[in-house]
Image (cartoon, rainbow, N blue to C red; front, side, top):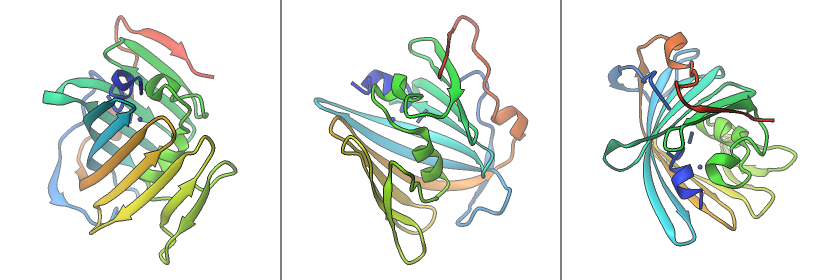
Length: 210
């Protein structure tokens, strides 16, 4: 998720705009019903050398189809919006008034983290899936949930599970650390077509990711 820390705080100030996330139900959901959209309340602490930032990341999830992340900083300051589908990503960095879109690649999140973090890791982490790949070697527990992964540039990803949906994900490399806490999950009651669409805001510079 500096990161540029302002920039990761632009994600992770993980990754958002005039289209707000709509209201959700009040009952917490331990299991995600197949095909049902949910809203995840998460918090992240991001460290990079001498900087440390705390952000809230509200995640709308349409399982297997789309993810939308609204990242806010201190006092609810809006820093970034990210929409991801299985192979593509769009995000608006509000503090720099920049809008990015393109395919998943190790480079596509560089403007946010100021380093190469594959968005497929975030996609699978949010889905509780094993992110094992040719570049990432992972271990799983007896329930086939990922518990630890190692990748290039000293990247490690660790999971700590509590009572569902609570969990902690720690992403680290030699430049930064992100501790990501998943706290609550509720049913999302708004239209997917509204929630999972991100258009370039007026006045934002558009950059095509390759």
